[in-house]
Every structure is written in C-alpha cells, then in structure tokens.
Image 1 (cartoon, rainbow, N blue to C red):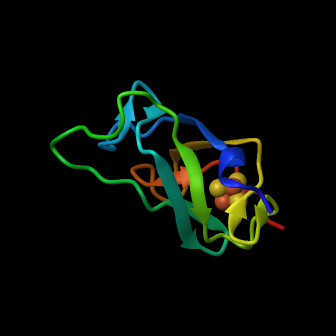
Image 2 (cartoon, helix red, strand yellow):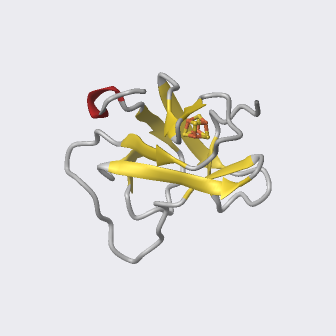
Length: 102
Ligand code: SF4
C-alpha cells in the first residue's frame, strides 16, 4: 500500500468551471474520486462563483472509491498520475480519464 508521499499527482484537469481549477491545473490539496461502476468522477469538483484552493498546485488523489479500476489498490490510486476531464456521459462532469476497468 502506498504512503502519503507517494499519492499520484493530478497531472492535468481541463474542467475550467471548477472553483479549484487554475489554467488546467487543480488547486485542491487532494481530490477524492467516486462515481458509479465504470464511471469514475471527481467528487471534489465544485462550481462556485469564487475560485479557491492552494496558490501552489500540488493536487494528489487522496482517495478513490472506484475499486473497479485496475489502478485501485485498497481504495487508493496506484497510477503514476491521473488526468481529469470531461465525462463522456456528461461533458460538464469531471471524470477521471485515467480510469481503466479491471
Ligand atoms: S486511475 Fe483509477 S484508481 Fe486512480 S483515481 Fe482514477 S479511477 Fe481511481
């Protein structure tokens, strides 16, 4: 099992409408991935009038509930990094594009 220093980085997030997004980077300290089987969504996504997050963009995947993803190990992400972007089901939805079904 990975330790906190090995959490995968959010390499890119193209969801401009999220309050944590700055120039296609995520400003949250860590994100959580949830969703439904086969559809991994970023549940940290929030669209508020204000922008927020850290000034330095170092977001990692802190937790992932998608045990049906081949990168998932004990409800943590073991991928080198992840990309977040528009979901195929709903383009306004932030999905983990690195999801790979087991
Ligand atoms: S790649 Fe898989 S395990 Fe990693 S955050 Fe995305 S859905 Fe979760």
